[in-house]
Image 1: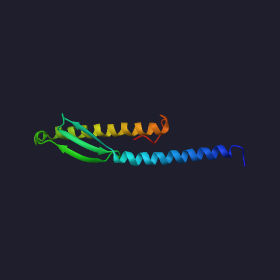
Image 2: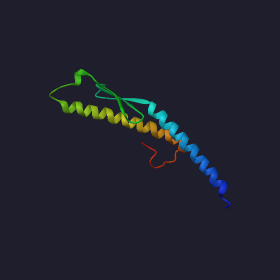
Image 3: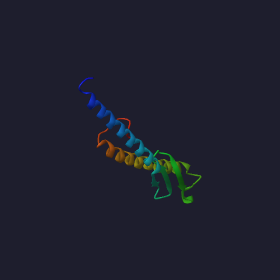
Image 4: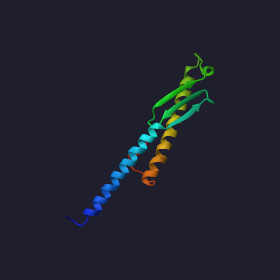
Amino acid sequence: MFQGGKGLQDLLKQAQKMQKKMMESQEALAQQTVEASAGGGMVNVVMNGNQELISLKIEKEVVDSEDIEMLEDLIIAAVEEARIKIKELVETEMSGLTGGLKIPGLNA
């Protein structure tokens, strides 16, 4: 056996611990939700940590059959705001696990 064997085993154990913590964090993140809105609260969305849209609420005052494009824009804006909040949440959680080290594929 070569001299670095013990060090390699320790490194593998640390990697396994980190992988387990990351999986636990991803499961916890999936349970969290964020809320976002657009148009002064006329369109509200709730999204979970997996970036799945959970809820969409549209105030009837913003529904105008003559201006569907505005409603579409408000929905897109609210969903994008929620997606950004989720990304920030994921980055914060993952930076705690990786000590701030950017690891490709870990950030949403």
